[in-house]
Length: 116
Image (cartoon, rainbow, N blue to C red; front, side, top):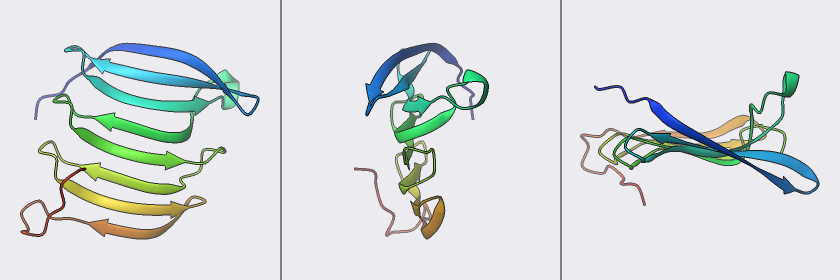
């Protein structure tokens, strides 16, 4: 599989509930969105704690992952992964950083689920 590198990163800042968050969007060299997510400041002023939804994409524009975090950076909600063909590979649900559901899907099975 060919590796693609991030060509450009755009960071903007948003204020939500009195808290400053950075929205980081990364793009591949062909201009396709590679990732989009909100972060809050962690140790040493690094914007490294995810907050809210975070999505990543393959070079072809199809979704790669969808993740959901609470205001403290804990996994909270649905986490999904897809393969490069758009087939859903896994579906997990977290509550306060604890996994409460995990489903894995076989790309070759007849009952595979496609991304919405």
